[in-house]
Length: 168
Image 1: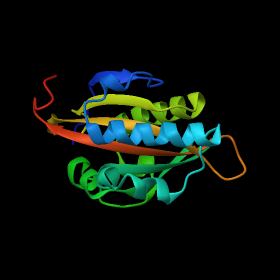
Image 2: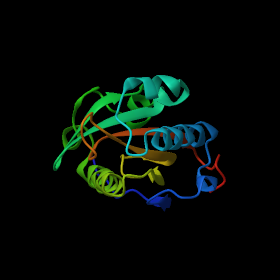
Image 3: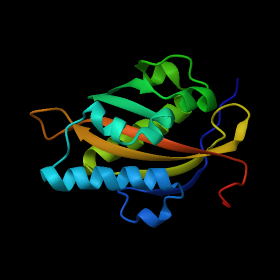
């Protein structure tokens, strides 16, 4: 199989304007993260209750566990498995996703962790064999572990769009 680089249609790092996010559920999830951040005054601690409060995006989400240069996928929603073609629910990023897209994701995760703020990306899936007709928005939301201010987790809900449904 031949993989090509993803085509980035829009991005913001950090995300400062929710108006660029096309999907309402993703906007709501970012607002939920912002409210949590404001209530604790620092990077929020990851807790599955955040995902449960935003249940409408869980089936299209991936939770990344950041460990230095290593990145692990620890939760993958059904839509991610279906559209992206992931077979396993857990594992090393580079073992589950073609390197050409894993490099892109890894760079975005590092930027999100560095800024400690949501990051936005809208791209097509040209990196995944014959799926260039499929596009997705992804919001990278940083979380810490209890007792730390460093970003250790990124909760990444996505919104999948087939063809030109989003008008881009």
